[in-house]
Amino acid sequence: MKGQTARAFEERLAPLVKRIEKLEQCYDLEGITAIAERSAEEDDILRQIHALTALATQAGSNFSRTVQKKLQSLTTRLALVPSAPRIEVIQFAQSILALKPIILVTDDTVNEEQQPELTRIFSMEPTEVPCFDYQFPPSSSDGVGLQAVEKEVMGMTGHAYVMPSIREWPHLQSVLRGRFVVAFDFPLVQLQLAVSAHRYGLPVPMLVGHSLLDLLLKYVRLKDPINDTFEQDAPPFFASQDCYALANEDVEPFIDLSVPADQRARHLLHALQAISNGTLSLQEPVLVSPIMPFAGPLTDLFSGDEA
Image 1 (cartoon, one colour):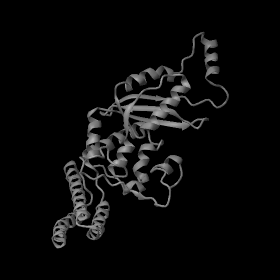
Image 2: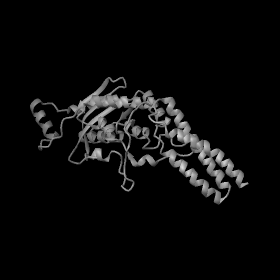
Image 3: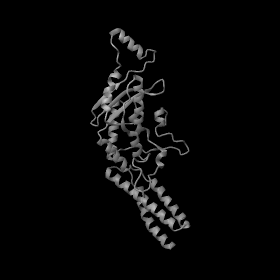
Image 4: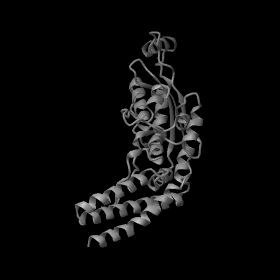
């Protein structure tokens, strides 16, 4: 009986080894069809490994321990094959583009309360037509605050002074209302808008959207894909890639404030389109030492430290 089980195991194991060897030779995978086929192949191999694990368990503990070592070796090899995007990420980017999203780019500075205060808001349609562009006046640092300015203007003109940012705010809200928004770091944009709204006593815009940063991390498999559950018997995705960080040159075009906002917006849109086509090209992720606490892939960039 054990001999029959061992033969059945080897007969099912050999094809899996060859399939993994084939994946190990597959580099620079691009295109929706190729990515879909690759995702399906990975899923099927993992299902076969789980099925063999169950078969080994039924055969007894001694046989099971021997088999588990071989299966663990295959699982490790599969985790280390040249990375390719998951089809779920491609499909999610396609769904976002189907919503005709607003592309939102912001510039900011850190105020006295150590909060991100907006200095510019730029947005455009997916057709690359700008729909909002406003540069905020700098925060007063010489003791002449908004109240002093308002008093001076009232004395000179007899009319209340209305900050340009206050006049433009309803326009911004009308542009964003009911639209899906894509920003490089969506939660950061929400915080920036909340801080600026509080400064001027304005309502906080309610945004619905997504971060391109999240899609980039999932595209290169530094994070699990959006839909990380299959049917009941399917295995989960690997999470070992979480110890990597995006290459600086892949991130800087989105956050470098020396680059004009309209150019950064177009770069963001083109990256989103490339993800949806499965053609985005990124540098190899940078390995972070497993003994170091992982604070996030962009910690150094956002803090201004050199990598």
